[in-house]
Amino acid sequence: MKSIFNSKFRMTIVLCCIVTAFFTSCRDTVSKSDIVEYNPSNPVTITLVEPDSINVASQMLITGKNFGGDKSKISVEINGKKAAVINVTPDGTIIYCIVPSLLDADAYHEGGDQIPASVKVIVGGNAESNVSSQQLVYTFTQSVSTFLGFTDQDGNSIIADGTFDQAQFQNPFWMAFDTDKNGPKDEKGNPKKNIYVLEEAAASMRFIDLYNKTVETIFTKSDGMQRPRTIAYTLDGDTMIIANDGDQWSWNGTVVIPRNPVTRKFTDGSPIPWKVVMHHRQCNGGAIHPVTGDYWFNSYEHGQIFKVFQRPTNGATWRYGGPTANDLNIDAQAATHEFWRVQDDGWEFNIQISPSGSFAYIVVRNQHYIAKTIYDSSTNAFLKSAPFVGFPQKPGFQDGVSTNTLFHSPQQGAFDKFDNFYVCDAENHCIRKITPQGQVSTFAGRPGNPGYSDGALRDAQFNWPLGIIFDDDLQTFYIADRDNHRIRMIKLQ
Image (tube, rainbow, N blue to C red; front, side, top):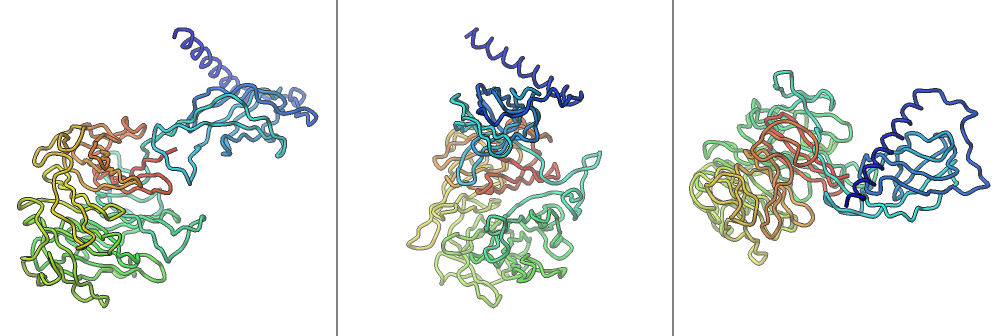
């Protein structure tokens, strides 16, 4: 063990010394006569790569022969991805480069996954080296960074539109991707993904244009929206559905915004871009079933779950209730028809349906647990839910399995392709991961330690994270970090 340690220690010292020498040579003038040219009559050969365990942004030294001492003529590929060549020794025997991300668009990985890596040097655009037989291992890493938003010196922020450098957020709360199936495409031919964000205190909605790098406010509380809680979309993607939490049955409950056919955004530029389709009381959230297109939502008053049975295309009032299409409530009056109740009165919860539609999580924020409900495709209905993780009315923090775990104010979650659920555990100031089997672990943040710092997953700090979405293509999370007034990002590299 001692000899292995000494070997690695010596390699680190050598690496640091050589890198220092490179930076020194960048400052000093190297005479052209000192530079050894690449010799096309001889092969380009790699003899050693250091270190042999790498990740994104690692410093790498490649030792070999006949690289030539002209950095501008050298390129390095690691698993076919171009590395940044920083320098080369004048005699063309050692290249200093930075390892790129080896994430492939077609491959799915998680932090800690490892793949073999191979290195190739190309000189002059066509002379390729051998591929070293040395075994290299690349480890995928995830880290937390700040994507958007900033505060003043006192930690305060306002709602400010503009470019990504100018935009500010006040209390970002709920997030939703907008994949416009019939709209503009990105450089890969896929529908462009932009982001809509609900702000809590100002009851506003913001639009994040990821391609033009701008932020725009769509509506605010002054437009008559009391407390927007969640965003959903019809299956065709052309109508946005917003659940609004009003105090009276006559207040705005569910509102819709049609997509503008020209701008492809959910606004026509008018002060009030939305239309009320249902009046109901104290809705904490609603979701569209990804297969049937049915809209499911709740009421806080009695912990009720409802389904929309009649959704006229002409924008007339929707009808909702349960458990059958014959059991419908009257708009703007107390709801007497329902599918079932989560538990008791005053359960603040939202429903988040898995991508397959086979089950949903009932995330109960004020009772600190998450229930699970199975979807019965024969009746097109969710069955009565049961506690899945966390323990009702017992706030705290504990990783583990099923109801032996503890949460403190869980809110929005995001599914990955394996039905793992990453949920914002707001008052624990972290992101928790829930597997389909009910295994709970801490994914990011320092539980019980609020703050603001970027970095490695468990070193980073959040302050009341409430919203989260996951881009499966880019393997990137976006997080609404409410009390830090920022949109944070977790990216796999």
